[in-house]
Image (cartoon, rainbow, N blue to C red; front, side, top):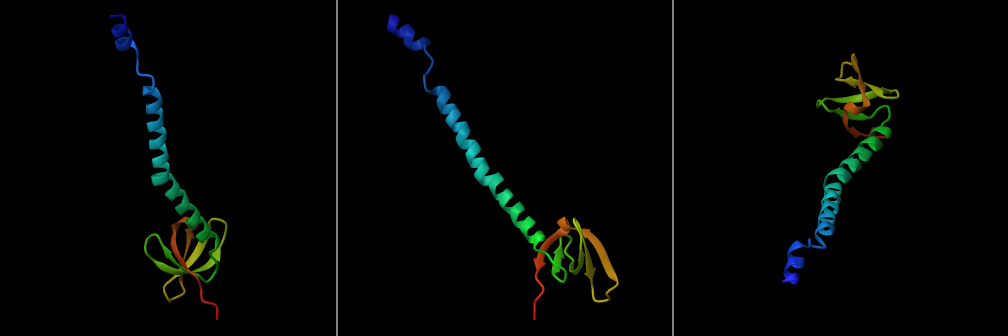
Length: 104
C-alpha cells in the first residue's frame, strides 16, 4: 500500500525538462522561419541602396521609374519622364529596385 501512495503522489521527473525542450524548439523554428529571412532581406536592401550611384535607373515603391541625379545622406533626387523638369527629392527607403547605368 505504501508503494501505491508514493507512485500516485510523485510528479513525473522529466515533465518540466520536456516542456523546456519544446519551447526551445519552437523559438528556434520561429527564428529560422521569421526573423532570419527578414534580416537577410534588410541586409540585401541596405547593400542595394549603398551601391546606388548617379545615373542609375530606379523603381520607386509607388511604381514610378526615374533616373537618379543627386544623392545625399538619406535623400536622393530622381528625375521622372523625358521633359527634364520633373525632379523630385525622395527618401532612399522609397527605392524598391535599381538598374545600374550601362557604361560604354
